[in-house]
Length: 330
Image (cartoon, rainbow, N blue to C red; front, top):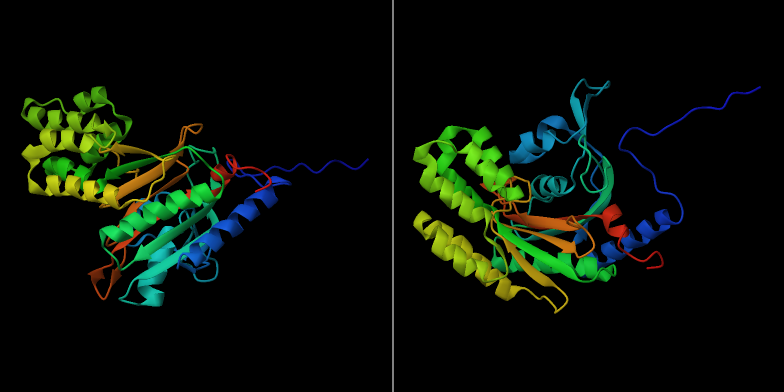
């Protein structure tokens, strides 16, 4: 009697079956059409990258998420891509080599060592669009508007747009730069969770009292547009650079093309979990999802062109997560 062949997929890895596979493919095509018609050039980066060049200036952060192994052919370390936006930045800087504005879009599989908090998976399909070489507020607004349009074009309604500024958070935490990266990472995590108790337990020295109160105030600065005025009062002590970040958010909001179905939310203590972001950060939610369906931000200097930091802003979305909130016949 022939024995049954036992099989299973690796932990955190899934596959798409009918009818969802076709649904996801339709969403993929729809997004590519949207991005190309909006002036973005489509790219298909490789699934494998040399580990030593992964992530550019944020190499350590990207390497943390990547599966890495030694190539039998060359002996070099290779990594499965955990993110395509950083590949787009590499292509812009080293393959396109243009000092003008470059707009790139993509849709492809990514593999991560760490399980996604959203789908409890280590594999997904990432779609996104990036703008390189343009540091203007108009580029930030274009990226945010296209992110919202992406989700709406797939039939997702009642969106909430969350805005923050990673540069502002960095300026606040700069008071502790001589205390080491571990302390700053702990404070970033506490800020993201809005945990006043954790902030208090991290900063126990009396000499930190003033700065601790500022960080606690920052953790509570979330809500509607009125938060910007409140932040100006509570963070004014930190100087003109912090106020400039708040002024930038104010101007950016005025440049956005949001319809009445999109709710605006500001979260000034949020950095999206990526330390390489250095300007505006943004994400989109729905009422029925407890996690972001799309996210992005400004990340100037991730790659350099002719030794000059290359301006960059963009967003990406998890296509499998988005598919859970779209109609099967789209």
